[in-house]
Image (cartoon, rainbow, N blue to C red; front, side, top):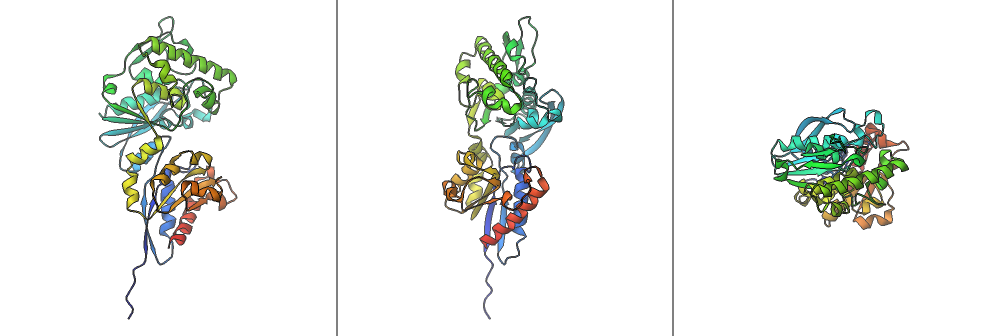
Length: 382
């Protein structure tokens, strides 16, 4: 009798970013894995899931999915309403994000408030995390609703901002221009903790490429408000210099100072080290050792396009994956097939090629299409 031949086993690492507005990275990975595992082919597919983030919204969820513990706290939302925010903590490192503390998605009724929104809630989440006694905090800066230069955050972390009458100011876009003096210093626990800013935004705080001009319109600013925020942030830089930060002006010009409406600038004032969000999270979540045990890497994000090629998360995944096949999955792909080789991609699957409906705001449809794509990937691998 012929000897039995064991079916081929293909080991896949499913390592996507979120599909913004539709599915979290974990939901994307789960749907793809369900499709891969459901194939009726004779071979078998082993799926290892590694939901990823690049320093924007979803960073806490990605850390939790990789083994961090989730901790919840109540903080002031972007316009001071209480919101429940999560941080991730593994006993050493805490991951805190702007998006779930003072992000655009938290604005009541989705009403943009470019001048009133504050970063205070982000500072409160940092303060909560410091109570867990981490040796390192990772600050994920994507998705902010405010352009307050981190003033709201700093009011929680040891600093007082006073107007010309000596009255204490609450940090937001409106009060930036009213700052007359700055008192206080960073909390002792903050000084003894390593601060990492994970962001791939390279804009300075001020100028034509600065936070108000580039990101202000996304948060609802008109031309007059952009000018007011530019003047207010310039005043903040001057007052921080007068308060003893002799490098204030230089830090305002630093790459990334304009991230999250200038929270990047405030983090630099606190001595934060800025790193590439994509690469840092790949290291934090142990991507390299995970991919070494796999035959195929599947990555993706909401849109595969020119920005992806410029260094977004799927590009970082592809760069680290070596010679093994790399498959990308996206809500839509604007990258023609002849350019797949620029990221060493074997194949790109797009939800838009499977439906005429807009899946970007339909989580159920997106998950269903991803399961179908997972089946198609499995068929191609076996």
